[in-house]
Length: 51
Image (cartoon, rainbow, N blue to C red):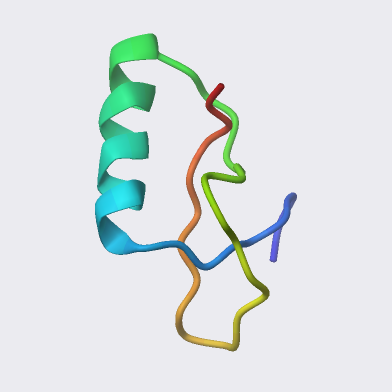
């Protein structure tokens, strides 16, 4: 994948993260939110870095 780590996270966390990203107008493309785990092909969610 181009530029970054990919994590598997619950959809609700991904949705919240993306909402917060839009509000913050951040542009980075990877993040760790809550508990993450390595994932298999086809399940990736890419979200931006959030504090």
